[in-house]
Length: 218
Image (cartoon, rainbow, N blue to C red; front, side):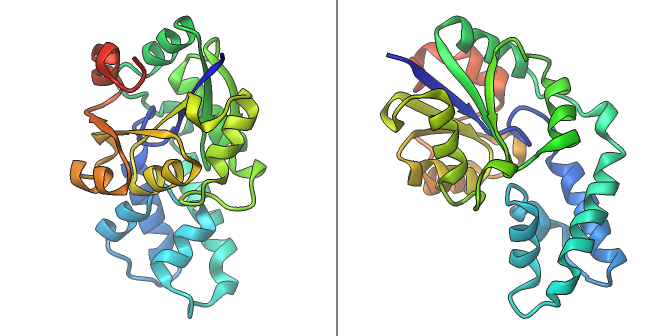
């Protein structure tokens, strides 16, 4: 039977979380909102509209939402040509592909941002498909992104492993019924990832690759 290896991208395969923190912080600052960077960091991994709602609350001026998202996108876009892959990211995907896993990305990124992330990973030969924010109604922590990735791979949840770096990833994977692996390279503590559903936690893709034979992928 086919097996699916589903991966989040930001903070899991590409070292972008702190770029998102700074560019979201600046977008909020430009719009007159004082949002602490540590709060932004904990919200990274949510889709843009959910992140704004999470940080500004339900009583915010919703008319600003699109402008905030556009400002963040413009600020973050300055880095598209130099996004750094995390250690071992491409090698891990190619190893799993070689071992017979169908590799699918599940990310809130889309369009030119997704293209920049894939260029950074440099493993398109190993990636079968991508479930982006354009493909689902609700992003993480809802299970839809992971469920859509499973549909693309054509496998049931029992034949899949999901790798992510945030609490939102772990919650989405747990709700989708897949085994979840957490990585620490996005800056979220091990205990938080485990509490949210991570079966195992590794430092980064290189660490997971080095210990693949004893991981949930074994």
